[in-house]
Length: 168
Image 1 (cartoon, rainbow, N blue to C red):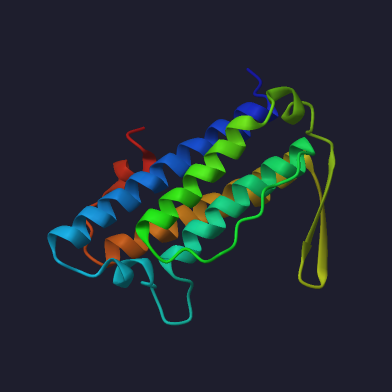
Image 2 (image 1 turned 90 degrees about the vertical axis):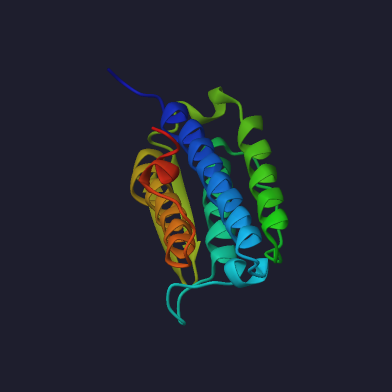
């Protein structure tokens, strides 16, 4: 059995963005039920020097749209990182999903050996499409969705592994 680059990217990105959206819905419900200001959860961190829940969502969105854009050659939409509410974070996810759904499967397939250059501060990284997807994009997405999950769980939101996995 072989998988295409599209099968390994866009559907996986969409699944985990959907799961992230569902986690945020549970966070919203929890805050409402417990009469906690939404901003407390949106700005929550696991540790003072770590990024907030809102940044985890922003980065998860950026990783997926950036990866899809680099692989497909389609320009990635720009999103300002100024979301401060659950509703704004949900909008960010929805816009990202809309972009991902607009990518033509044919533009992703066959990019296994495409050269992908990634600038990170002063460093430039060079990947093939396959290596970029499997060692950078997917792990990054999963890291930030996991961290968002952990922030919510740490703050009392009643979520479990199946919420993270999306019902597998």
